[in-house]
Structures are given as structure tokens and as C-alpha cells.
Image (tube, rainbow, N blue to C red; front, side, top):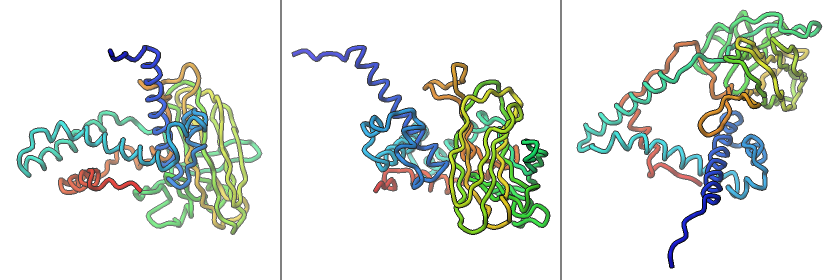
Length: 319
């Protein structure tokens, strides 16, 4: 009996399913970076990937299944990258040379793709009466993991003010609120989302707000051992506009650290999208960086070899 070829409708359905799976995995990966693996729920993944929760469970039985799929996908990406370099390896020296060539090519591609960061890290004062950011001064010191006042933390002049990939710590008074600033690199319409968390019963919490240089105050919150969803829909921006994510003490300096890693995404018919249809986005946690032009020290050949081993089948354990 002749084999029936898949219809055009079925092929289109299969292509859509594959695209949906990739969108789910991309969304899950972004959320894990923002909140950590334990802090992500299936409902959040469904919302971020624009999939109904019931449909999400048709693709993945639970969060563990998504984690396994992410590990397998990353492993496949590394395998494909190395395949061309390792095809003619005959000796150990050939192998090491191939690993170095692959790493060098990866660094070169990263340098080509690198664009100026849209994020800036500073401090200043938010004037409650005028509902605006009074000033913005750059935090002067980057320690490799955080922006702050100086090498010592707290700093003699700027106190506890600090910004990290996932959040930070408010400064010592209302004049030293920490400000994570996004500078719009193009014209368009964006949406903002993120969760603000203050996780201490001690003290009296924090104040947080989002301020646009074009539209003014977009939202403000007072949190004490609480969390809030900080969302803005359909914000028009022009190139050079700024959006400030501001956090200060509420009434006193006492356990004023916080978590807040906003994500800004283009929306609407004019949104710039990649080949897979995903809208351009700026992720505060993923794009957190030091001073412009600062590069990490390249891995040695042995460090590169160790990373390849850790990504090989023998080291890929999934519970």
C-alpha cells in the first residue's frame, strides 16, 4: 500500500508546533535568568510565551520536562558548533587546536554582534511633589558582579547604594535612590514587565517607581515584605528616551535590598522581530554588564577543554 505524503495543512501544523516549542523554551530560559529555576511557574512560562496553560501541558508534562529540553537543546547547539572543528582531528594536539579555534571563532562572532548596551546604572533622587527624577549620576565602581559607590561596600560617600543583575540595595536616604536606566535605542512601542520583591519583615520596606522621560510617572509602589507586578503596556518611545527603574528606602535604612530585573519588549505592528517572529527585547538580568568595552578574560585551552567535557554526554545528567 503506498505511503501517503503529509498534506500541506499537516506540514504547516507541524511547523507551527515546532515554533511554539521553541518559543516556550526561549520564554522559560529568559524567566529562569530573571527569577532562578525555583522561582518560575508553568503559568508564568505560558503567559510569557503567549500560550494557554492547558496547551503548555500538551507540549511539556511539567517544569522538569522543560528543564530537560533546555539542557538537551543547549547540548545540541554546542555539539553542532564543535562538529565542524573536530571532523579532522587525529591526535590530541589536533583536538586542542580545534577547541582553541572554536573558542576564538566564538569570541570573534560575539565581538561582531556586540552593540552598545541600552542599560545604565546610577543613583539620584525622585521628587515626590514633582513626580520626576531630579538627577541621575552614574554609580562609579563595578566590582565584576555589581555597580556600587566604591571598592568597599557600603561606600563612605554613597553608602549601601548598589545594583546587581537581579536587583540591588537602596541608598542610605531618599537622595540616593538607585536607578536602573534604559535608554531607547530606536523608535517604537514597548511593554514593560517584571516583579519587584522586598523580602524582609525587618524595617519598613522600599519605595519603587517607573519613570519615563516622555510620559512621566508610569507606576509607583511601597513594599514591605511584599512583591508586586510592575507592568506597563503600550509605551511609546523615541530614540534617546529614558525609562528609569527607581528604588529608595521608604522611611528608614533597614534591610532595603530588593529584587527587580525588568524586561522591555517591543509590541504592536511596528515591532522589530527576528526570523522566528520573536519581538526585540531588552532583559535587565541577561544584559547586566560592566563599563563599556570591558571584556572578560578569555578561557585558557584547558579551561575550554573542561567546558567541552562538562557539556558532553557523560556529564549531562538530568534528574
